[in-house]
Image (tube, rainbow, N blue to C red; front, side):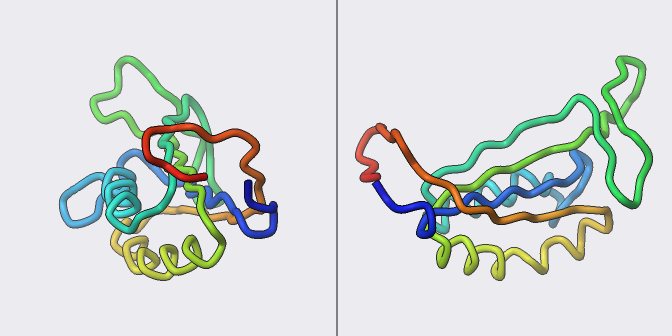
Length: 118
């Protein structure tokens, strides 16, 4: 088990409609995180939210394009997360929408999976 100051969680807040090179930005980031060797990632679709630059968005059954908040959480060592953020930071420019990225200390208290060594 790693100490809390060695392990961090990066949380990325963006929109389901943000694009990067013709793909959904959240998909591109998640696939790149896997290729980069990040230990774990989870993508969550929000049902309602707002950002500093937009109005409240929520799911509505009559909308043709569902624009909802998306949250990506990535967990790994601080240095690796920071290098990954530097790597993908230019991708947000293409999205042209609001986004926010946070990094906070975390502690892995239980981890089991395949060949993963926690």
